[in-house]
Image 1: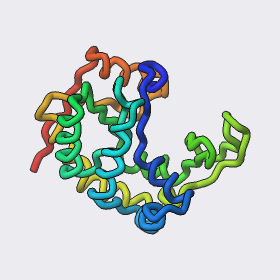
Image 2: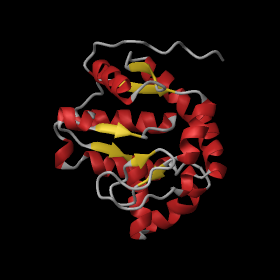
Image 3: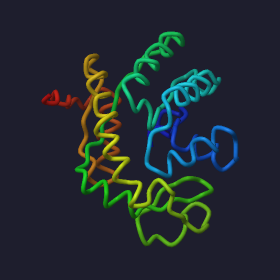
Amino acid sequence: MLRSHFGIPHIATGDMLRAEIQAGTELGLKAQPILAAGQYVSDEIMVGMIRNRLRQPDCEPGFIIDGFPRTVPQAEALDGLMGELGKHFDRVIYLKVPVEELLRRLSGRLVCPVCQRTYPPATSACASDGGPLVQREDDRPEAVRPRIEIYLEKTVPVLDHYRLGGLVSEIDGRGTIDLISSQVLAAVNGKFTSPIAPRKT
């Protein structure tokens, strides 16, 4: 939705890694068992991927980063890269969903291997190309819970990092697609502000 509205690229690091795996690259061979186990790929690899991607010409007008940074060191490296590029972030969107709901959604999610569009359980085919859907290795039940546990441990603190700059907007991720989309757009446009309360330590 944001990509279409603003006409800027949507950079999803998960899709980038899966493309490397499908292509059988050296990076893909390293990343495949890590993702299948629900673990995070190293900061060094992820920062290198993002550095290369953000320097491409289509990112000059702006970009949307999805799935990165996932750790505080990644966030700090990204801050440095943004400084090198002479850019800044407008907003960090936090779609908040209870853990049990995440487990239910992720363990049943299907994806089109061609366009990477995701679908809920029991969907028969991709709406774009009519092709069959598959379940990604990192969406299998045995991989989902470790992913969420690592997220809570390593990624939630990234919100604190960006909260210091007043960039974070929290949005309830349990509403309808239209409702969530409108709130995300309003947040990016500066019309929706709901800062996350500091976590208790």
